Figure 1 (cartoon, rainbow, N blue to C red):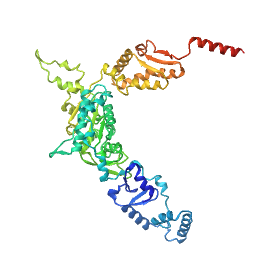
Figure 2: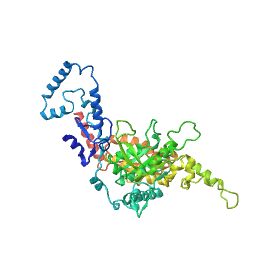
Figure 3: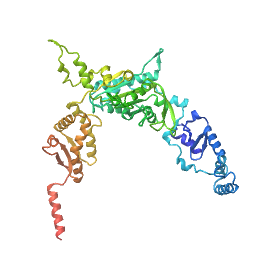
Figure 4: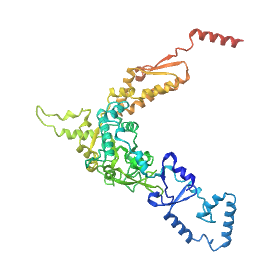
Length: 502
């Protein structure tokens, strides 16, 4: 093995397996590798097959034409005279006196780094394992989520407990021969309620590999689209292709409601019920062959075996029209009498999703086997006007704080009155897209301010008012306190006029 290969493997203190350039099998499966120039590795089987093919093929009669062979050998000898003796020995060992192909044209820098598989080692396993005490308690996880996510107290509590119990299960394995089952989570909430943001914040707070996948691109095996195993492949990439670390990670599958069983269709449901059936083995726990550095399996991508038994799956979706399914079920419980529940009682219920049951999700189009592997059902509330106002100003990376930081770079202070925040939240409620509407509204009103402020260096403060948001007035602009006074401006104008007349 050359020094460059060795240094490439030792980079960042990580050792990777060699992957055959032809069959793409790693060293743990293919066996010993032949190391060729330009970082190319070929397994023993592919090398023998290649040599057999070369020996049986007569390149346009070259084997029977001594003049052609002599000419090739002469050119090759002249080329080798210009190189060092060490390089000459290395190049002539594999294919003596024949140089048909320039291997550098095939690969460039060799196998891409993202397709390398980290080699399993007992020492690395000891280093990678950490104590359960390093995972914060549920109340600490929720306290840190409170700094970024407004509201959704029940959802934050459920996720904090689930993550904590999951890693207790991973580290302890079994307790008195009692195996702890995995608690996958199903998050249900309207659009813009913070499902994806909640999981992204959780991944930033915990030092664990996390992959966020989209269920809309998944199809049944054999059809155009991402294979079901591609969600595990994304987790493997997030763990730097370390299989052991990826097997302790978290996978969040967004838009899970888009793979519901299609109603009243005669065509094959390749992105609905079949995808749910294919995900059953992933959710419960199984060893799957996943591509490394790609979304689909093909001959040019190495495969790695990942066990999903200790991977926590969190599925989230908006589940549109699920509220009406819940209302229909609740209306069946109505009756006639003085103490009976009326049919229109549930029409104005805002938090109707909190009454969801497994039956409602099954009627929506999810198969019972899929629901059974997601035992924890967590619902998120729709955002009201007061929550939208808090979202604007309270989180650590609130939208208002982002714009205030942008204007601070221009040495301008930005303020929002309480009336302006209420007007923004009121407009966002009309759009009915949750917290996503807040940024679009602020972008619209901040466009002119962000365009005009860099023109005038005397502006020191800008205050956004309710009248400006409602279109009946403008923002309040204050001049810097250290700007020129009126007398100074008159003196400067007089000096300019004198110099101009002279």
